[in-house]
Image 1 (cartoon, rainbow, N blue to C red):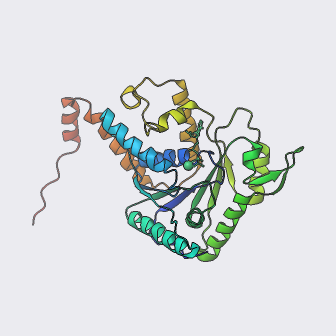
Image 2: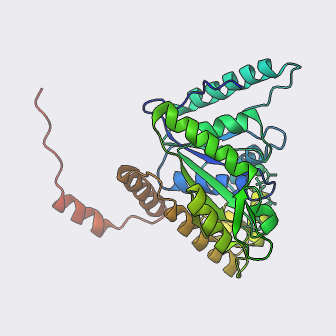
Image 3: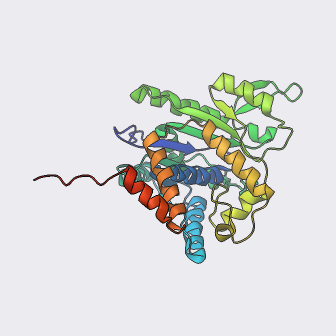
Length: 314
Ligand SMILES: Nc1ncnc2c1ncn2[C@@H]1O[C@H](COP(=O)(O)OP(=O)(O)OP(=O)(O)O)[C@@H](O)[C@H]1O
Ligand SMILES: [Mg+2]
């Protein structure tokens, strides 16, 4: 396998990879929500879809653009690339072509980004392994089921104690080892409960696996219709929950989903700069004030408190 990936380029964005070799665990949903959350915090965000068969993230983003035009609203949209799998007859040629395509996608985006969010397929492909090599943060959603936990760890059927390492966890451990050797960087691996029920069946086993495999695990998102419903229009639960954006009145489930997703993003402890936060706050304030009639009292008060700068002499 070719491993000369464009790793840790100085000044490169913080790379967040969403991965798990378990289909339907919520990778694409989390990738989209994370990208939008970061954009809302004033970050410059790029996204890469490595699942070129399904193109689920690519379609999600396209839907968002179409929905924004349809409703005549402004929605944050990341810079996006989809990297295709090579399908030639020779494995080496395919890997070389995929490495080049991945490198091109990263290079075409990285100069102007703070964060790069990469969505991966649930199958073990060369592109998916490359992504795991460049991850600064790796997010792995798991559903609340012992069958699904199997990609991370095997468990005793009676005591639920961890008895071995799952195949995806082995892939991650290998990628982390290589990354450490390559540039002494540490990948922060975070496992997220997704589609969980109140009981959280796998919680104890997951905690034990986390100690063995060195990942953090966070309570993430409950099973909610709203996640399925929103993907059709490219919306996320982090978008403003008003009728102009949703096209309907928000309900309680929307609000609960927004709260749980915001809490999850906070717990990830991503390196978001204060400057970007201020940029986002100023932009939000501008949006509000742009729709409010000017108050002449405020205007005069501003002028008195903040007189115009004297002109510079040449
Ligand atoms: N918390 C949730 N509650 C309810 N439905 C969810 C939740 N998270 C994701 N889904 C839905 O589950 C399905 C699978 O989610 P998603 O496509 O994000 O998973 P994935 O891991 O990317 O799948 P794949 O492995 O096929 O790429 C989608 O229909 C999505 O809308
Ligand atoms: Mg997906």
